[in-house]
Length: 290
Image (cartoon, rainbow, N blue to C red; front, side, top):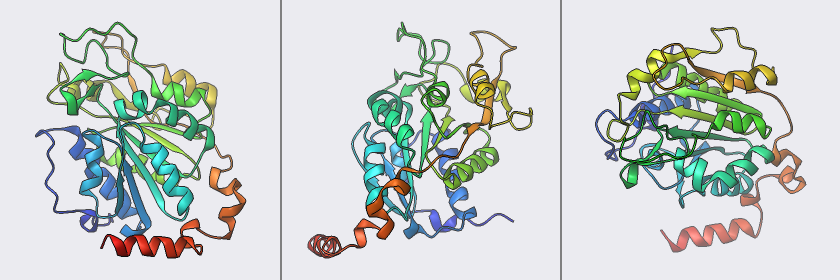
């Protein structure tokens, strides 16, 4: 029986367009947190600037809304200050794959226990639909030239040593919720790229376009422990106007290697935030602003 996601809801009104894929992603995340039976105080959501970053406002937990492209840098700081927190970094494809690409590379390399959820719609929705690195000519607005090939985040993450690499779709909430639970449960860095339809700036109905082509890797017999097969699957993507190519969803690859915080001896004596005088300094800062 599913747990109620109501404790994770807030009264903040969303400003997303009606039909935006962000609503489904938010719903899946609330459900995933409820199913994991985490308390709100045990979770910290770190977000960058953009429509995806607003997700943090609608979750009843600790959150830090930082700078554009810096969500993962801030998330690592939170994790190192209190490694007992479940830390989630949320951002759009521009936030994580363009401005934040350098932080993504080194987060994957370090492998901290952080779940990274990327809302991938191919556009900068907050600034009126310019193409992001994942923008594709057949999906974004025709009046915006796209001289570069789209960036493949799944292939990138596999190539630089990701220990958990997955792709979900906002149009399949039960499947997306399961992937979020797996990413949050992974003992290392969990990258979940989420195909997110944009009803305003995508040129076509991407909800239908993805749904017609998506298939479940697990149902197709994929072995997520096989890196070579994961790389092959990661290169699957429909050619323009193709009805035959498919889009794989699910866990491409999962491996186990030491988490970053487990290799730092100062953290073995407990969270840094609980140390003295760090605790006194934190209490003084909180008193000043409350």
